[in-house]
Image (cartoon, rainbow, N blue to C red; front, top):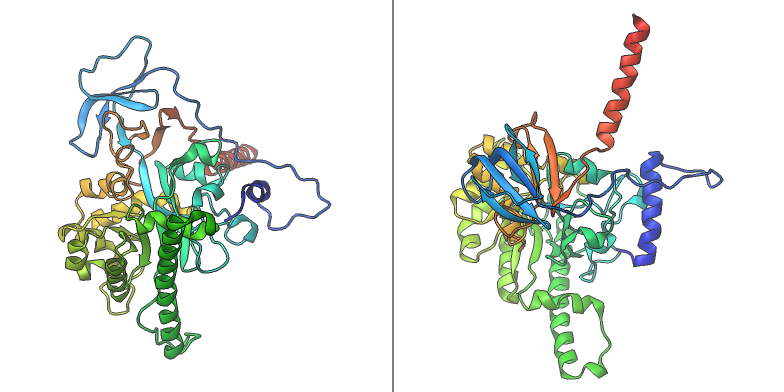
Length: 454
């Protein structure tokens, strides 16, 4: 991650590349620096009432012919026969549906733009132990991927750093705003760790021998234990005599983890990885969330007894092993639900920020393979909010929560459904994006061609 001045320079470079869609710019070329043209929504100036549609609170049954009233960015009331105050903007949404904003619980959106262009990737820091990294300060509000993502109803994202062993701290970001400060719903949500593979991968293509892989695994686990031990020793020393010990930003960042306030969000798919991570969290007395969780149903009792939530790392993926049933990735959410394990579904982390817009279809795939439809919807709205500690603000349509919601013409889990309106804390969001602009451009191209052919 970069310091503020460096990051501002990075943003200028990024927006230049995104606007020109070029991989190289001549030093002598005259270049205009252009950000994405969508303007963030203006703060709500009067109460707004969405009237006559079907309200889906998610935390309760759908309300047909309902009204949702929000003011000053917060939901005032939800239901039927609601009194609408004088001066409120009344919007007829008959035949439409209102849902809470979709929430991607694992993403690098805002940290990367064009994966092939190194200057636009700010997802990881050099080195292996970087607990001081904060994703929100590197978040690029002008990313072209943000408008594309929110056009499909995804207005909230856990943006997380990657790379190294301890990658840094993630943040829940709202996908509308002028600056990263505007867009941060909650910073420092979790400390991300890439758990080492426990069993050597024996493959003729593997660049390392089994012994080398085992040594690297042991080294990584030792580094993790040492990092937590050093952080504890640092805090004890600072409490005893702060004037004698200089501040270390790495170990300062670990304090909330050691106090049990911030969880370790551990990337682990394999059964042995998950079991090892749970044992480590027990020994170190820290909170744990598993990200990925392909094999999580195989150790359901362990996870349930230790109250370990799972962020399922997408359903659009191949089986992890040759002898796994073809539908294993699709059935993970339902098997977790049936086992009574707290879970949610993420989508973009595995495939990159450019595919964050496909989040609802990961949930739809799980629904097609056994997960009840209402559970699939909760898995990308309410459940990520609960797991990540922001359910008092977002995740469902309830009085007092943020008016962060979408208006659609159908079920958001179905691909033909269009998002017609969106609000982030009561601000009406511009739903135009680069994809739509290009669609209009080429629609006009072929219209002219047809005219010329006639």
